[in-house]
Image (cartoon, rainbow, N blue to C red):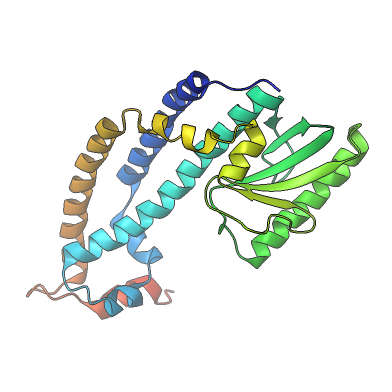
Length: 245
C-alpha cells in the first residue's frame, strides 16, 4: 500500500475535470428540440400546469441535461476511483464484462463494479450485476492464484446500512473511497479540487444554455402554439406518442 497524496488527487482532477465540462457543453449544443419533446412525458408537464412555451422548454431541457450530466460525471468519478486505487493498491481497469476495477489487498482479490450512487438500478439490472460478478469470479478462479475473490458494488456517494448482499458487498460514499484508498477522509478530500475552473466553465455553459432556451422556445411556438399563443397540448401528445406509418 502506497498512500496517495492530496496533490496527486488535485493534479488528476484538474487535468480530467475539463473533459466533464467539455462533454457537458457539447451535449447541450447537439440537442434538438423535437428529439427532447419525443423523450419526455407530456402528461406530467400538463399535470404541472405549465402554460408558457418558455417554461415547457426549460423544464424538458433541464430534465434532459440532468440525466446526461449524471452519466458524464459518473464516468469521471469512475476514472478517479480507478486512478486512486491504482496508485494505492496497484488496481487496474478490468476487462471482465460489467467489472470496472480489480485489485488485491490483504490476500483478497477484489472485483469492483462502480456506480455513481446507491439507487442506480432496478431489480433486473441488479440481477445482471450479480451475473457479471459470478462470471468474473469463475474466470479469476481459474486464471489467478487468489482463491478468495470478493465482489464489490462501489457507489461514489450516499449510504448503505446493509453492505453484505450475500454474494457481493455494497460499499457507498465514505466506505467506498476508504476501501479503495485506505484513507478514511478521502471522500471529503476530493470535493475541493472539483471546483477547478468551475465558475469560468459554468459561465460558458450558461451563455450557450441561454441561446438554446431562446432558440428552442421560438421553435416550440412555431410547432406547438396557435396564433393566439395558446399551447396545443393535443399536438404535443400526438408528436410524442402517436403511431406513425
